[in-house]
Image 1 (tube, rainbow, N blue to C red):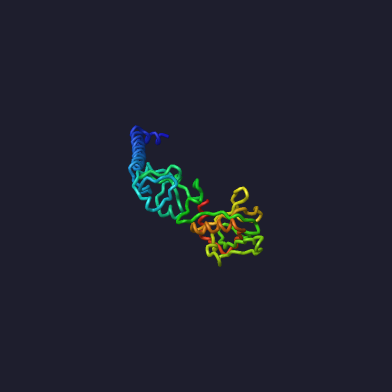
Image 2 (cartoon, rainbow, N blue to C red):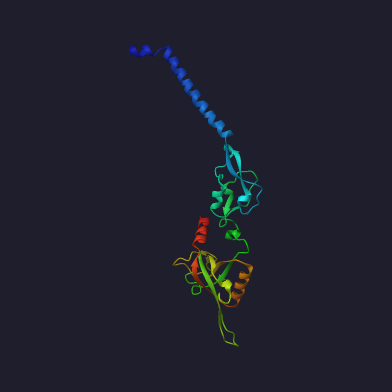
Length: 243
């Protein structure tokens, strides 16, 4: 006990106080340095190269990089525009983007999440067209399949001859991509077993000429959709955008 008291004197107490003070000073300095670094450290982020209007498709030309103070970067900022655009078509939301400000992922949407739906991604004369159908006329048709169209036109009372128009007579009837299936109440179907029969098959047309021909034949007779293949790459890309 006496030995302990001998070493615990005014000098050892002073040394302990000095040590604790130095430890507190080092800790404070470290915290201050981190705080200052967060205020002045610059990090490169993706920003719009110009003001971008709402519902505009984002392209490499509309995006650039800018060094921004770390503390001013939002949590969902984008750091690599190549990786960002590789995920699929991206569009601005309802408020657009301001030139020079970090692009927030929460302010962008894919085509399926846009208020205009997947149609916003269509370009170069493409469009979506609904073809009225039933279970017999659209067997084995699912989203992602490629179909040939056949139009059955019943003969009139005078000639009594019926005709079937195929891709032989109309080359634009060949290999249409099936975008989606719709039920009687416009609900989206997946083509799975047990689901109700589709009332409409939505196909992607590639030109106004193709669209108008399909509409004309659809009004003249009954359209049959015959699967001839699938575009799995395109379908997987659409499913990825829906997630």
